[in-house]
Length: 308
Ligand SMILES: [Zn+2]
Image (tube, rainbow, N blue to C red; front, top):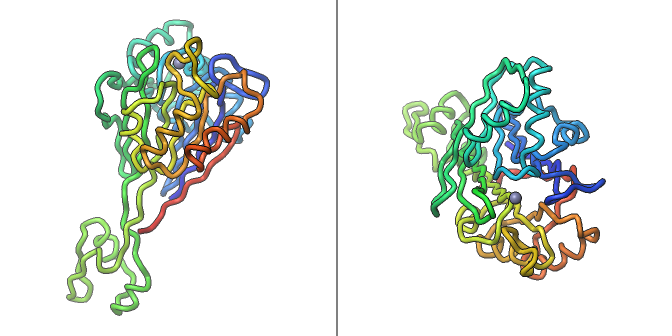
């Protein structure tokens, strides 16, 4: 199992020639590959093409908030899906999703022949909400502090048992169908012998990734990203001041959040176009949280499970 994250767009507010509006693809590889999209700024389709990833396979889109730089790519994407005769349902998760998705669909003659399902996620309170669950993972949202209703999302893969070959050999056990039952039910019988899963397997920790969208530093993000493998945080500014600080974080504040939440790795994104020297931002954040990178467009990150 593996997660590949591709940053399609990494700029905040106004794009540049090098940096597109926010959009992050999460490809989850298990038995089948799933493609999830977080935010969908202008230019998302073209960025998908440059990254060599098919946008036709996206089944779920998670919009953090309804500022145009985070959603304007939805309109052309829906039009393309229509032209390409998409059949499968598209779910769009967001605060106030029902309201804004219906407004988008009223903006033109899309002629959709597939189902678009908006799913509203809560945008007040201090607890994570479980908004989606499959056999392999759960997705949570939590309200963040921006200038409009906004949330952060957490992709959390479920823990799984991983069979330890050495322990099997030690106990004189052979592989077979009984191992599937053991992993699913925690106990199984092998040639009359009752085996408990913890005797022959170790836990493969589920991967955890959090994306904040636009936000000031806040406790809700610390809560949601506790011990995450990767935190992708708003790092709009080198330093926030009275004039620019509305609803965004600076790189040092984001690094403080990462440290408090004890995440393994921090990637800063939604960087203001005013910064052309990204090393300066990286260095400032690394003084507080060494395992920090600043996202570049089309940057790719691979995460693999740890077995404990
Ligand atoms: Zn915003």
